Length: 545
Image (cartoon, rainbow, N blue to C red; front, side, top):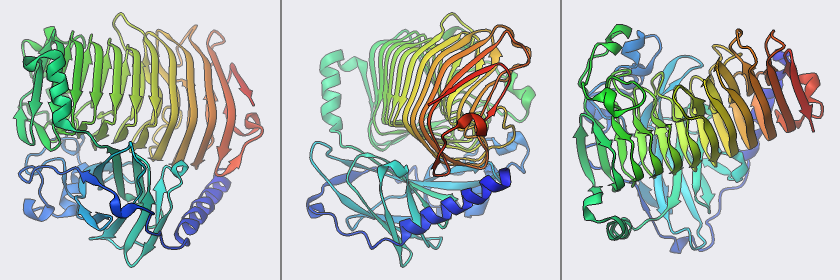
């Protein structure tokens, strides 16, 4: 069966790429000559080429290789920041050159590192627009290209080592080249233009100048930022603000993780952490973290700190920032309520650098975000503490998973998790296969089972390619008793994968797994009778439509 699936998987991908590259050249969009845009540009003092850093591409990406010892592979380095000038591509929008940046990422399928390239432009979304992008190979030869998510309907043409495509909507567009090779991905973020000075003035008028902290374009270095019991506070990282986390503690092995203590840290977080997260919000109300700046934690060693953490906070708004190479859990909402996250991007190559971890929180929305990390990307958990996890929604998010899981309930279910929705999202790649009963693209996997799961919807989601399990519902704790997973629905899901979904219970009849499958498309073909094709475990109630 697996050989049969792999055969059609290869045929499907090859035909898709062939069709996308035998189209006629992309015409100049009507009215594009009047198209106005700006582009993201980081300060010159923060961003260098590999040549300027005295590094070859191989020397840089090999730092993410799993052939290295774990704490070396995930260790920090200070000779170059986490964002560099991409050696792979140059790009133009309507003949205007735009910067192409890159950051090291991890590829699990062969445990190596590579560079993910990206650009970001800003457009006036209140008026109709259309533009051409041209991507030219600088260090690689481009033979063909596809643009993901496929649901956006963007076709690319490749000619003379240049790929062109026409785009007329805001969103996140990822280009794959040379047979959908995941080693040289390029992502274009097209986002709404914002008048930063006007926004800042409005915040000042609303909250007062003392409560609006602004970082202009430039480089800023901090040991950590600790914010406790603040109210009505705005932290605004203007476009080009480059915030760097300083390395203080050498973490060379597991024992070192508990070696260093910042004495006031345990009292300023509810996690029991002995060191501060790099940016720590604790017991705050009405907090905004905004602006098109970047938070770069490349210098930190593995598990030296967590990334951006909101604990016991209320009314939180986070938007537009980029988080680069956190050494552990990039973004966390814990025991917080009314949290809104928009247009935030996370890139990281280290183990445990999970993307968006929504834990024990109520009324959370995550929208239009992109994450390519070497662990879970968009996840809901329920750790210890007093709160459960409830009413969490992810929409229009794009995941590229280099190790574990992309969307779902992952790991800790020590409290009840309910009313979670993943809608209109996409998986570019997911290539971890180290435990296909524990990881997958869309998952409900309970590894700690003191709580329960009730009400999880995956709707309108496309998975371009999964090297292992595309859908997994599983009670991973074999000692679980009286544990419920119910009202889980997968609706309008399409995937290309080497494996079939799996829905499994446990030996104990006291546990419940209840799942509904409605509109599943496998390798381009609708599945009419999923029960006969999917792997259904003991004591599961699976309904199909």
